[in-house]
Image (cartoon, rainbow, N blue to C red; front, side, top):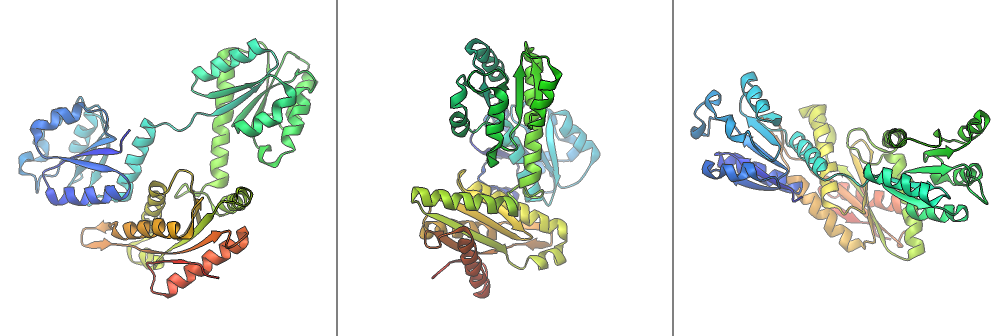
Length: 420
């Protein structure tokens, strides 16, 4: 879906502000001032949301809040977000009754609005399905499991040869393994031992499938780090419930282990691990790599002057902007505090500089205003280093950090490339 947002308002100044701010985050705003054309907008199901300004101080066509005809939005095909200049319970109730999913009071917190739009966009553009590898020598049985999981929205892959398991696991990158204990040549228990020897698969859920009701076999399987043990024949509903619960638990645990709670970016430890892996990959494939370290300028002053809630909004805003402007293949992390890191794959120094400088300029134009009289603009500084000029993860990080230090010392709000 295109990231289109309809803005229903008669306030041109407000429309210009919202349009500019949302554009920074990749949303395209189409203003609706002619209420005769509103019917077509409401019927359009291609937009991320319809944002409705129900303020009346600058919108004489609305007359008064309580006389506004909310029924015109009743059949909206897109989610409705309402914005008002007063916080009134009756207006909130009317917005909910026509299907409103959010209500903001002016001055609008842009980061909160972006959070809501991003959530709506994600709901309409679901993430990649879970990948499940089915290790089962009976083709008919394997096909049955595959059909069940596929109908549940997962991406299942079948392996029938035990000697081909490790290669298939490495190529398919599963989120979960369904493993028959009675595989020929190499039984399921030994296959699990082999898989668990590899560091990157230590935490992957393994659900054993067996015809054997021997309780000791179940204990042995679970002692190997198995997450569940299902006795054949397995009901479709039971299989789906077990697989989904294990996958959701894995997703939650992974999030706690590798994600920063405020920005949902990789945390310091997770990013360092990814950095080492990507430097090694770039070395094997003989391709360049750029590392950018970013630090928000005068961030302590933001917290001291506007409060920690405003500081959190600034941090989340930069995280969102990086996610919007960088490629899906690029890697973003929060190093801690007000420092962020990005890894631009297959990217030379000059290209990385152009990309990060464009993001820097855009970020400086975002307005944060906790109240109407105190507008807040924030900038960041950055340092870039590249592989193979700096040949390993530590040297690469140190060089980017030095370049960032130079940018800070040269007046801030700029990006510097590390020089030998």
